[in-house]
Length: 361
Image 1 (cartoon, one colour):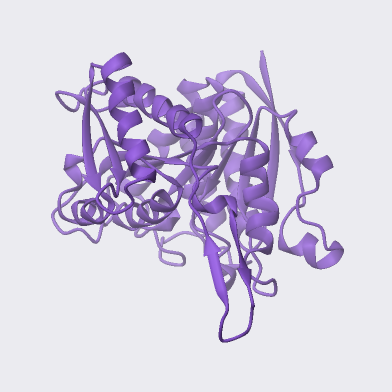
Image 2 (image 1 turned 90 degrees about the horizontal axis):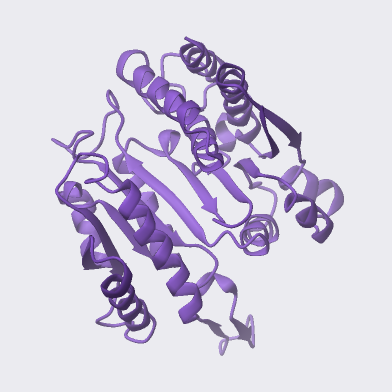
């Protein structure tokens, strides 16, 4: 029997609630499909910081390297200044574990209402691959004369050819294996680079050159496209059906994945993975802590449950992952009234029970 060591980081706000339901579903799936999940919980986030002043220590980061995967709820606290937890926990984990890919499926499930009128599951069905450890988020820059009329702030986007190329190669491989042609939904597996080559000529000039050189040399079977990021935002609303797999840098990816999330029905259904293909990956719902719903049994756990399915897929437990996804699709098509918190027609725990029961069948 396969056995996987999983670090569970419930975090803050509604994070522990949604992670409890994801763990519930994962345990049912592991029992049914014959593998074991050895889960260890880590108390990281705002509550711990307020008590101890600690974020993610180097010692804990070293421990996390010994796991097969990490399941994260949400990190954030209203009483802590922005940036402390984001940099001290989330970015430190991503950078320290070299999770250089952020993988974000943008898929509208049956029965889920999208704000895009006339667009359904056939049209909203693509994946965004975001470079996750470079770019403007690395903190290159600084501030001088802070608090004065002459204050100057500089934050610089920095990318190496190595960082760009490894992200692009992952994206090409993903498009080859999981694009629309591979899934029987189109004539081509298509990878589109999202950039801004007309203005950010140096950084996205590098991305564009590497994109075409790698494609010509090693992936002639993958169709290539390019969109400026502002045009891509228009098309994500106007005609999302043109997309298959998208790849972009860190800051653009951060923005367009949130736009994609609302088109697929909101943050309650949006799951993501921070991937190190050669190491430890971390999976999380992207909705945040939602403090106004904490403890009310009203938050939607489906994004966390789908993150658990993504985790199983990464571990090679494809059958179990597909069963969880199918169970979520069944629930959205037949049971849930809405993806919004307190509007589902069921409580958080009841939705988790529903998916767990369907997975067990």
